[in-house]
Structure formats: C-alpha cells, structure tokens
Length: 198
Ligand code: URA
Image (cartoon, rainbow, N blue to C red; front, side, top):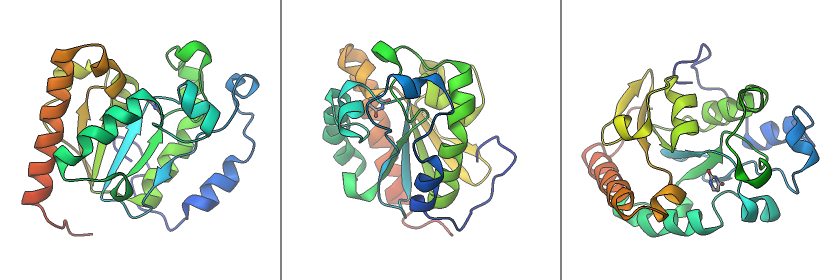
C-alpha cells in the first residue's frame, strides 16, 4: 500500500477480509455504531475511492456514500467517465464517529489494516482519496488537501489522486468546482491510459 511496508497484491477476497472484521470490537466506536460499513463496489475496480468514515445514513444502511455526499459523488462520477458499478469505495474508518467528528489516531491505527487489505485485494491502478483523513492515510503526509489536489501522485504501484471531500464541497461552491475539475482530470487520465499493465 502507498507508503506502507506491505505494498504487494494479495490473493485474498473481500469476503474473507469482511469475515476477519466480523463484529469488530477493536476500538470504542463499536459501542456507538449501528452498522459496520465495510465497502462496496467492483472487486476488480481500476479506480478505488477512499473516504473518511461513515456518516449518519451510511451507519444506518451499512453502505458507504449513500447520503448527501454520496449523491454528490454519484453526480460527478460521469465527469470521469465512471459509474458506481465500475468503482470500489471504502472508508478509512468502518464505523461512524459520534456526530461525525474527525477520526482519532487510535481509531485509524485499529481500523486501517482492513483498508490496507482491501487495497491489496482490489489492487487498483488509481486510488482517489476524498478529503484530508483519507489523503493523509494513503499518502503518509500531513500536507493539506488544497495543496495536494489537482495533480497525480505516484506511490509505488499506485497513482493517487487526492481531492476534496464531496461533503465539504457541498458547503463551498468554489470547492465543488475544484472537485469537478479533478474528476475531469481523472477522466482524461483514464482515457489516455486505457489499460495499465497489471
Ligand atoms: N463521508 C465519508 O467519508 N464516507 C462515507 O461513507 C460517507 C460520507
């Protein structure tokens, strides 16, 4: 995984990873969650999206990006020539932090092995990180998203495209424009690289 020691694909299925996660009690978020939100999408996705953590609707439905942020994401995917069924989406945290507060370092430490294994299983060409927590986890940096977005970052096997979180962009029209510009840039990249060597 980008910036991590074990960057190698792994022949393990997403179902197996989900089974290991089980009824996880590795961090205190298990006390307040309604559902674990593992991830959803194409297990062979070329483009994998990484968000922060489930919100209210995701926690209730057990699926990532089904609330307003998800509607925004669905609406702009076509700018990149993508549909929901093409991609895989997972979050850094599988359980909702109370009142959607930011993930705590201990929670990321406890939960991120599952995301790491999901990335190794899917082995995408491109990882799109949505917002700061996902970007900081994948790129192993503390630099803010507004400085990192707008270009691709190579991390070993992976091309990483950090961009603004679709929930944050809903509150800021200028950010929404930047988010959409990034998705068009992703579409251009995919058109120029029809199939990377696997
Ligand atoms: N925001 C996220 O980061 N992830 C979700 O699944 C929903 C909202």
